[in-house]
Image (cartoon, rainbow, N blue to C red; front, side):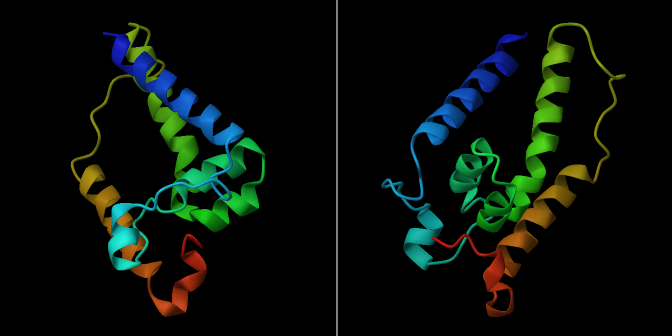
Length: 129
């Protein structure tokens, strides 16, 4: 059914509007649990501030907050668009399953990013929070 992608899209849009109006750089936004307990950045740390920067067309600052999330945004939008079109019975491309290793590869990239951004030599990848 079309309700799942529409609900997801509405929630993402609402969250984006909230982040566009409120500045997570200056307002109190709770730290992620991992950051609060360990002081380490998770793969998504900085993504709220990155969304805020993207709503201001400030790509450089968004990349500084979380490069992995910022680079993934166009792919997330594309994936959502394909999901919505399929759910409406009008697929934009032929339906093909993801390659078997796609999900493990994405997980490996996220885990590698989480480790690398917390190494002193790569401190510039940190969220800055």
